[in-house]
Length: 97
Image (cartoon, rainbow, N blue to C red; front, side, top):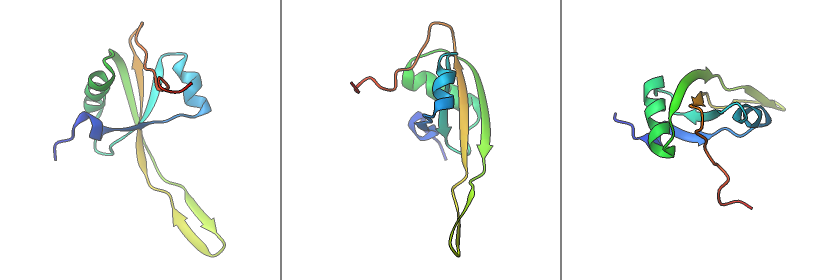
């Protein structure tokens, strides 16, 4: 199965911790589970027209949740922390005011 750049990068992960990391030019994305570091780097460079310096990936196991007697599990996912080269940045909130 051939993945396109938009298949590899699912969405950005926006939390307080990732917003603080953006000051250091590090951006966090939810990516396809079978994507490797090289594919993530190429996809980010193609989609956002930036230069990627480093990529770190990790698999996150979904939490088990319980509501009364019902037990469920959140989905597993893979996330990538991408460090951009000096002078590069990504704007997520261009249309928002």
